[in-house]
Image (cartoon, rainbow over all chains, first blue to last red; front, side, top):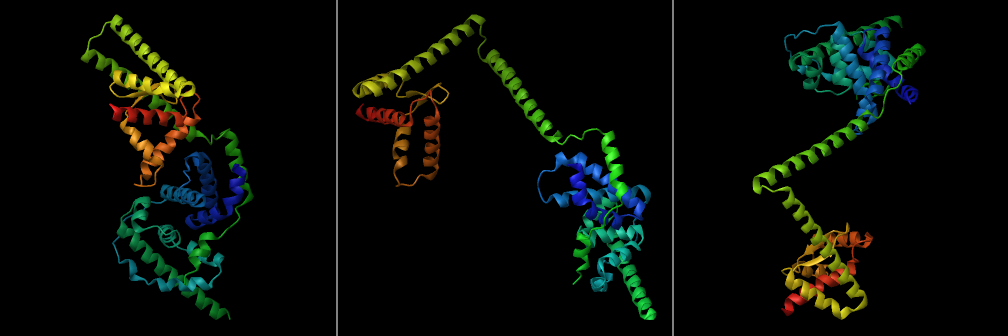
Amino acid sequence: MQRLLYQRFSAMMYTVCLRYSENAEDANDVLQEGFMKVYRSLSKFRGEGSFEGWVRRIFINTSIEHYRKKVKLYNVTEVQENTIEDDSLDALDSLATKDVLNIINELSPGYKQVFNMHVIEGYSHKEIAELLGITEGTSKSQLARAKSVLKKIIETRAQNSKRSR
Amino acid sequence: MQNFKNKLYHYETPPPEDVWKHIAEELQHEKVINLYTRRKSKFLFYGATAAASVVIIFVGSLFFKKNKEPDTTANTETRQELLAQKIKDSINLNQKILESIIHNPREKKEIISKDLSKTKKYLTVANPEGQPVKISPKVATLIISADHEFPPKPVWNKKIDKWQKIMLASTISPTSISLIDLVQLAANSENIE
């Protein structure tokens, strides 16, 4: 049973762990911890919503816990959520998923958490604020800065590839 | 537009092989992870609730009895005997009615009329558990009209249909047909009076 669950979800959940962790070593730890939590909490699954969604939530929460043990998030000055247009991320569509993952991993841990939770997982700023123990304003400003940094990374990559040609 | 979100959401990266080894080791240390904890706790919860309800009802009934009428043990015993007798009488009467329906259709009217005069126009029948139940003849109208389409009574029809099924399934109670006959007769006898 445990083995089957691992075979079915490990690859997908490992991507989640990699997206939230600072390095592969941390991701491995989170993957192990996450699966143990899934096994221990199986009886609590009520069948409301998809099982995959339930498992994913456990892994995201485990990643956040792991991250919060290491890094203390500070509330920063609020900035408008839409300072950076979402269009700036359209360039990511043309890249291979593995490259997108690598680009996101270049973000600092704080930006990465908020970006993943809001853009990829679809959490609201209120939910992010509750889970990370920050204010909604901080979540919004972290996201705006994450987008700004991502834009710069994408531009630098584009320039580098032009030069190499 | 921004397909990378979906791609990334479902993207799979095979984890290093040793991760499963560590998990397997940890699982061995924990021996067995009970997958049925919730069921057990649910069972315990319902069990505890049922036990608590029984205790509350018991204590409540004791308190009620004490406050309302301070009974002696002898009185309680007499009351229980009386109640047992009443039930016995009721079952006997029901049996008598049933026998009369089977053997002598004429007699059943008399028995019912007699019974009605005694019991203030209530008919005693056995429920699926074999316990006596008093049915008002007024219900008769409702039961008799259950089969008619007009006026529509979907809720009552459903209830009566369910009741009939329960009665049919029971080996102790009279059949639904004979029961309806009884109720109908009770209603008729009320009209005669």
